[in-house]
Image (cartoon, rainbow, N blue to C red):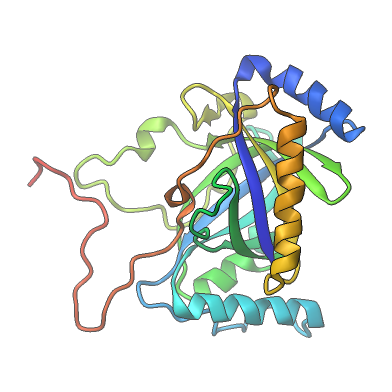
Length: 281
């Protein structure tokens, strides 16, 4: 699948106004969800998803096709993958919440490629993606294939739809105090597993210091080998940009912002640390 999108920043003070505009534009109220997002780093030498022992069998044809496509892409290059789970603030967060068995929960396994180089329409970001929905035992699948858990966030999401175009306002939060994410000398290890219980909603720390929202307007092309369909999606997004001109300031985003590739390690060469602490011994 191919994903194309426009991006704009929305100040927290303008959030309600932005929702009102998008509700009118799409003729629907927002669809609010909260997602728990886990990040897994692939091995230095790509090996795909070759161990499929933890994947539920028998696989549906569409699931088998998507896993095959994912395996092919991850065999040429390692990436950081996401597993995503919908959670409820009052049920799954805070001191009264119970420990979540993520392997027993249905989630989404998501991979996004490094975006294409800028085109004549640089305000558009476009990239190949694979999403596997309603999958269980995703933690086991990641572990079986040497994908290392790195961190997790909570995503607050408001979505609107007009025909086949998705409008999404999102904001991400840290699940631990900000100091826990700061490299302090020897503290360069990563947690071995996700949190057993999530903190209360009120205790989350916004990832953006200004607490802004990100607006993305997305189009999807199911068959990414059809350039005519991609151009049609580009035209749709640019037309929407014109309709919303003066309401949202859509930005040209450096594609490196969306780079989830893992540096490859050549055989026989020792891997260097990804972060170097200057002035430390």
